[in-house]
Length: 197
Image (tube, rainbow, N blue to C red):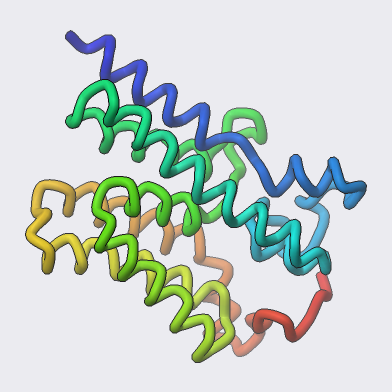
């Protein structure tokens, strides 16, 4: 009875824990991404290395693993999609391969949301891109986009998913603690403004 949900959660975790930014940077000869910029394994830090195409590919793959985990689980059972999405998100944040030091989860969360509630995913994307265009802070865009998810779920009547989305949003904010501190201090770099470490 419990085996299938556990396996789906584990499948989502393993898929989500693939550190695409780190792998792609190494394959391209860029060294260890964790030694560049913020040390994060996500697309924003890949961008800081100066490789825009690689950053875009990292973003797409981090989104894709969240979406794929949910989509595959939904083919097995409609009730397993949420578990797979939760696993993928946690895998990205805390990958076992990197001693549980992963990314901040924004792109993977977008993939999960698009697969579960497409309209909420659209709201997420618009909030993310709009905030990024307005303020040019990747962290601000990511945090506001994450906050939009439980709000969108409420507006769209998806009440059953709200507790999970609230939890995932809080984890995104938790992972952005250093960014919040830099924003308060006026030291957070804007996208495209600096490549310094």
